[in-house]
Image 1 (tube, helix red, strand yellow):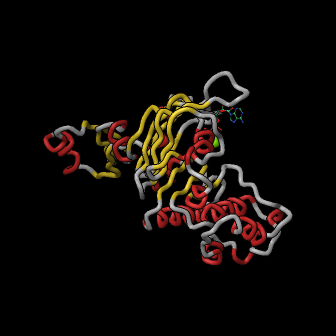
Image 2 (image 1 turned 120 degrees about the horizontal axis):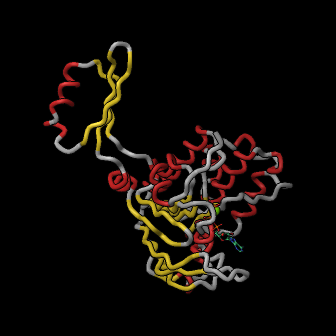
Image 3 (image 1 turned 90 degrees about the horizontal axis):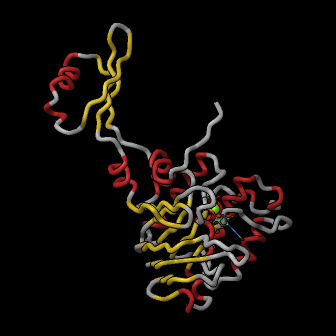
Amino acid sequence: MFAVENLRFTYPKNKEETIKGISFEIAKGEIFGFLGPSGAGKSTTQKILIKLLDKYSGAIMYDGSNIAELDDSFFEKIGVSFEMPIHFSKMTAMENINFFLKLYQKNADVETLMKRVGLWEDRDKMVGEYSKGMKIRLNFVRAMLNDPEMLFLDEPTNGLDPTNAMILKDMIREFKKSGGTVFLTSHIMTDVDQLCDRVAFVVDGQIIEIDSPRNLKLKYGKRTMKLEYKENGKTILEEYPMDDIGKNEQFLERLKAKDIETLHSGETTLEDIFIQVTGVGLTHEA
Ligand SMILES: Nc1ncnc2c1ncn2[C@@H]1O[C@H](COP(=O)(O)OP(=O)(O)OP(=O)(O)O)[C@@H](O)[C@H]1O
Ligand SMILES: [Mg+2]
């Protein structure tokens, strides 16, 4: 559905390349996550993919056509949400929506969308009086206005409360179910884990890892079993290698004889993988 080959880009004012030769493909119906530290080039890449930035090198193919050669009909087929939602703040939500609807030939059912994200009641409110989360939800509705085939979402759930984030994630999954394709960036690793079929890790303008969340967890996770049991009022933690665990006498003896509290495989989280892969140590103040 979407293919990027050896993409390179330098901002006119800069000397150094921001995007340093990235390649990936997104299949139809796939949700593809684009992850990486702040400044890695995620938003820049999204802007190139939606023809907002040009003068790049490499090829970007949409459904078999090079986007550089596509006319404005490309914008009929894609839906976009930017990381900083920009709306007309002196207009109501509906006035904003109607303004953007007119730009498209195909229109989605606005009432259904606005009800789904919980903004229908507030549709005649001035957007300047919207809360941050309301603006973000309106931003998502705007991405869906033309009933697109493919969505480009830059941190779509950032700043939403868990319930609203779940509603948006459900909508993204339904979009996928109906055949839609998604390019998504996010810093919220649980969202990425729940949504994405595959993810790419970008560091300093280059992709350094690309796979499904499951395969990444297998690759970066520890093949161990952690066991906690209670003895004389104290909790004791032990770790056993996963290989031949069924033949590990001590492990089996613990299962039989002890009061087990928890039992976990050493599966890692995408958050841990992010830190491991991107090599970005988080600095926490004690
Ligand atoms: N308009 C611009 N002109 C020059 N440099 C820019 C411009 N926009 C972004 N950059 C630079 O390009 C690099 C990548 O920025 P980008 O916004 O793509 O990062 P990002 O991966 O989306 O980060 P974040 O996670 O913080 O959103 C940064 O070094 C940034 O300073
Ligand atoms: Mg960004």
